[in-house]
Structures are given as structure tokens and as C-alpha cells.
Image (cartoon, rainbow, N blue to C red; front, side, top):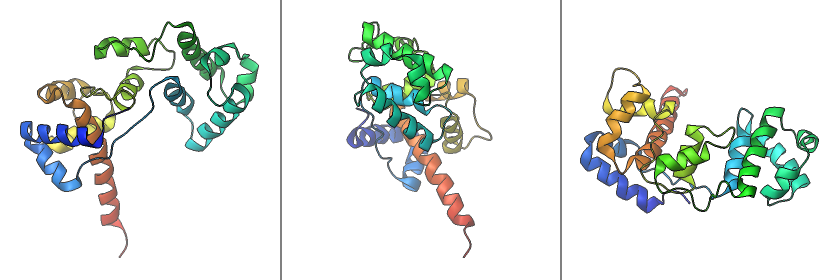
Length: 214
């Protein structure tokens, strides 16, 4: 599972000692809630199913998949399920190739989600062997499902935006700049990422409240 509330608080307190901007951010919006996902193929399958569709559509497809494959969505069964059956559940041809890629890698043992490499970049490389799982999705899995505390998804636009907001930069910094800025935040960059998403949401909500009619 991901970083616990206790871990987040401890890491953010450490970040506040490194970078005063976190002191001000925590004073404005408090500590974030944990973002927890289960380790294993089901979480990655949900990521694939949810790509570029609404939450309602993803849930409907998921329910139909459970009906035809079984509630545990066993990778061995999923890998052997005919494409036409998966199309009937609502998957596009591209999504079928992604789903089959995940199922076949796990079913064959080529990808062991219970024993990913300890080194983060090596784990990202292992996960991105799955069709449809790019670097960002791999990073999110490692952060939310494995609780790896130094994962830093610097390509995320909200992370970039809020790093700029927190540090008072004149414009949203690039991925390269965000990576460089966060070097001083090791080994707490995972907590920093979760806090940027929290800060982003709270800031937008506060802005909407300010604009609400009296």
C-alpha cells in the first residue's frame, strides 16, 4: 500500500525543515490524506481501463469484465479470453492489446508484481514493459501501491504547477526544472508529490469559494 498518514506527516515535516515554502503551504492547506492502492495486477488493470474514458464508463467496463472473466480478473484467464469477448465488454482494440500485455506478462511470470526491483528506475522500466503503462502510470503505481517514498512524477502538470506556486515562480516550471528543484528534497519527494496534488485541489476549491455568489 501507499504512504501512510504518519509517513506523510513525518516526510512533510522534514521537507518543511529543508524548504520553508512547505511551512507556508502546510499552514494554508494542512496535511494531505494518504493515497492508497492495492499492490498487484488489478490496480494496473484499473489504470488501463480508466484511460481516456469517464469514471462511469470505466466502471461499466469493469463490471462487464468481471462478469466474463471472473471477479478476481485472473491474468491467466484474462490472457486466454478471446478478443471478441473483450470487445463485447466495451474494450477498444488498443485497450485489448494493453490488457493482454499486462495479463500475459503477469501470467507468464515475466513480470512479478510482488518482487519488483528495489531500485526505482529499474522498477519503472519493468512496469513500462506493459503496453499502455507509461512512466507516469508506473510512478503513480509505485507511489500509491508500493509506498515508495522518493518517487517524483515530475512530468505531472499539477506537480509542476504547484511547485511553481509553492516556490513563488513567475510561471509553471518545466519537467527538467522541477526535477532539478526537487533534488534537495530527497528522500521525501513522494510526500512532496502528494502534497502538491493536495495543494492544487485545495487552492482551486478556495478560488471557487471566493467567486461564489453571496
